[in-house]
Length: 179
Image (cartoon, rainbow, N blue to C red; front, side, top):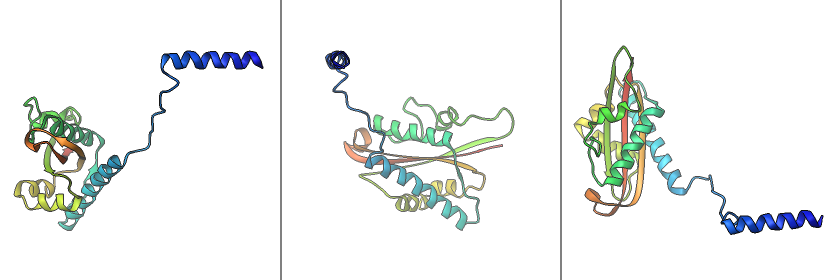
């Protein structure tokens, strides 16, 4: 028994000298901010689909690829401090979306995008009110050809550039249809 304890103590000493004994265990629980952003994403999708149904349109299905494209763009906008459908490197929005939501070998493919930002935050109802008050954004929401959507909000405590070092919430919705 003493030999086992001695080995364990030596092992612990080696691990602590290497810095591993004091390393905290990573938490997999989502933070409050992650939960709030996820709730905002879900709220935007729910509210947008309620508007579509009220206008006699088919609700949109959430698409993981479009959501990945939207998340990339929301994060990029916050990190680079700019606000545009084009990517930071000047790539047009549809080329960026195509990286995640590829065109079929045959058939049709189309994508669209709505963006907004608010400081410090915005809820889903206000986001949809804003978009529905804008003719271009409203046209995207009520376009009967869309079948899928990706939604991604991001909140940062301080964003530079056009956001003037303020806290900001950015929402990207990427619309798509493939056949």
